Amino acid sequence: MAQPAGTLLVSICLFHNLFSLEKEDYPPTVDYIIRKSETEEGECVFPFSYRNEIFYDCVNFNAKHKWCSLNKTFQGYWKYCSFSDYAQCSFPFWFRNMIYWDCTEDGEVFGKKWCSLTPNFNKDQIWKYCN
Ligand SMILES: *[C@@H]1O[C@H](CO)[C@@H](O)[C@H](O)[C@H]1NC(C)=O
Image (cartoon, rainbow, N blue to C red; front, side):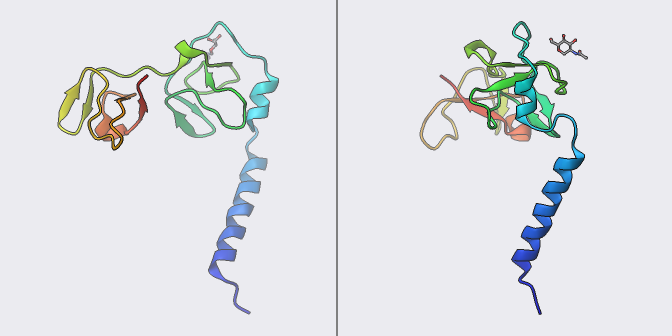
C-alpha cells in the first residue's frame, strides 16, 4: 500500500515539531517569558536571537503585546515594547546602488516610505515602514 508523499511529509514534520518541542527546554514558549516578570528598566537589544531565530524588531508571537529581549541572546530578560523601544532605522543604508540617509519610497509598490534596519539592505533585507 503506497502512502501519498504529502501525508508522509506532514507526518515527518509533526514528528519533528513534537520532538524539538520536547528537546527544547530553554526557553520553550512565549508563556515562559510571560511567567518570568518583565524587566522594565532595560533596553531592547537588536538584533536578538530567540529560539534559534534572529529578530530585528519587537516581536509578537502569541503574546498580546510586542516584546523584545534585553540581551543579544534571549536569557529570560525581556520587556514589552513601548513606542520608543521599536527598532530604529539604520541610517545610512545601502539599497540597490544607492546610499539612503532618510526613509524612501524607492522600490515600494504602494509608495509608502520605508527604511532598512541594518546598514546593508541588499544583503540583509530587513526593513520596516516609517511613520
Ligand atoms: C541581560 O540584560 C539584563 C537587563 O539589561 C542585565 O541585567 C543582564 O546582566 C544581562 N545579562 C548578561 C549576561 O549580560
